[in-house]
Image 1: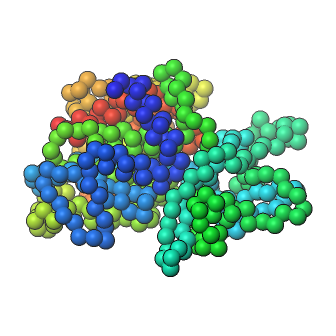
Image 2: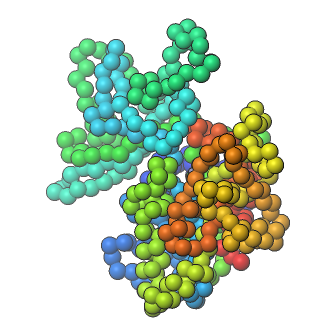
Image 3: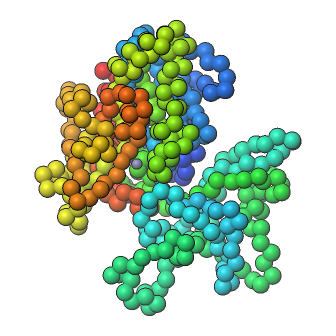
Length: 422
Ligand code: ZN
């Protein structure tokens, strides 16, 4: 597979993963195809050396691992996140307003609001319902043009291009359709019931988010699609895990809820990773001290996206560390600890990249910009292990469509694969 084919595979993965639930569902399919066996958290595990497994939580987080001959040698871990900024439907979301049916929503994560306007949108997520006396859940993706958030005309606001403050409660209701006065309501329940083939009165709850209907595109040696942050890292690390031939202790972590602070049972603050590693050690006959030896020998790559220099906004970037799109994987460092990269961790990855002929770039925030953070500092603090923050350089992070470099995505995959193999 060359870099273009690999990028098309990413675009396909993202197009099929409109929300976190679907990223995990698609990751499971790929792991199954590559011989990984599913373990359940609420069942006893049978784990053998030189075999590969995965366990998921809440359909939005997943940990896959391969078991080598000696777990005390430590775990080589790559972690990323399955969630991206979106708008979630609130309860009782249907509103009738000025002859339109519209929905009440709330922002999930920090998106660029304006990029969500005038797009053709749809809905996806999870529904719980009662059937045959049992509570069941189903994933749902309407996969059709369903709603849109229209802008106000420039004639109503001639100053709009000088900057307009979008109020997320007042200005962003998605519109479904025009309606007549005799409209009875219940549109959403009916829609869900029809899609799932269930009785609308059996619906107990739902978690539904908006997504862009436009498919990903290749623009010469770049690609454009939503959710590159962070399904780009999910895809690169997942494929590296599946394609690596080594028989050592490799771990792939897909956390949820990074975009809202990671403080959930599926987020990086949860004990999901620690408990999974501990349980694996116990199943392989290691004692508690062996577990701490394994942790002390472990290394975490926190894979999340990075900022390339924007040619139209050069003033936003650090003067001596310009990041080039298609210039290689980026190591992100911050003296304030917002990234986990440091003197203890960076050398191993730089040496690894050098050994396979891959380029590395180094990112620092400007001192007058706060920048972002990742699961890296959280997971490495929780486990007390060496960690590095890396990512592919992109533009328009947290826009409804982001822009990445085709070579960078393939480079990230090659480095992650080498990390799992060497
Ligand atoms: Zn991210």
